[in-house]
Length: 438
Image 1 (cartoon, one colour):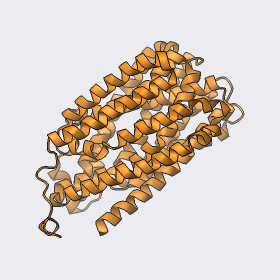
Image 2 (image 1 turned 30 degrees about the horizontal axis):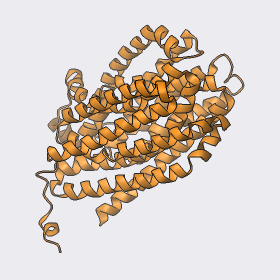
Image 3 (image 1 turned 180 degrees about the vertical axis):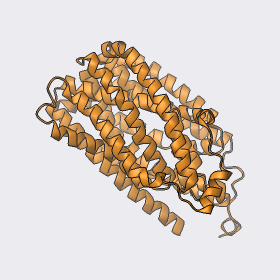
């Protein structure tokens, strides 16, 4: 009972922290929608999506590896954790520079394809956001690995929003003029990255006790090449998942223009509220699943099904509430956003379907059968891209939402099906006192 209570309380605290970030992000988006034209709002939204997308790919799975490695050890706040994080910084710094270079190289194509009104210079400057956004994310994932999900949520969601809001107020008079909003966003990533590092700094200091030194010795810290090789198999999980969420937005922008993109991504952002709740549960459940599977395997089966029930039914309740509040929420952004109401309802159902496979996906990682999960993600992404291409032409924004619904339904169904086919809970027996109760 105490373990269940601990899971619920920690999940509740994390959800509160997530919604603090969500509230700040929504306040920011509403402010941007109210002070910018719909076209310029679409441009700044596209820059934000592009920075987060490129940053995600450039992390090459290192963020996932940090959680997998650091959360698995019992005394993870000492030498091993901090040494592993420092090595991870080096890999992500190098990979970020590579992707920033690619951004700069392809910036003329990006400008022509995805933007209505942005200068090439501002687009190139925006690429700097990739590096600092990665710093924020790596630090947030390290907090997650230390079993501090609330700190992780605040670092990843609240800190960037606070930095952007603060700089919007500082540059209020110039913000809507001459695309200053693009550069202010880039500066906010720099500021948030520096602050996140300062907040994490106490956990980077190596503790000079014997136990932590032994831990670091037992778990050899991999060199840059080895760390990269171990991270890469985990990258598709994040990359393809994110592409599933953002490919429709990119295609709406390319096929319908940035005004429709602004409407669609606003509806998508509201639907992602359920994913913020999911992220809070993820930050609580995943590290505990990793630790239990390694140190208390007899408890894993029971914990898995309790966590799964919490995800499925908790997210269903959130989805229903959000569906009821869909139109009033869109109205906050402006009367013109009401036309995205149907899109929002479809996306809410799609995100709930996606959420139902969360804990099942974790078991593929824990059992080191990530290749199966990657195959499902690739097929789901292909379904999403093909459906987007066909349906956006005939159904507009609603077609993009339907494509997401189809892809998420396939993803959830096949993850659960393969979970049972692979018998991923086999070998995790319940304790004797539970097996013979009642």
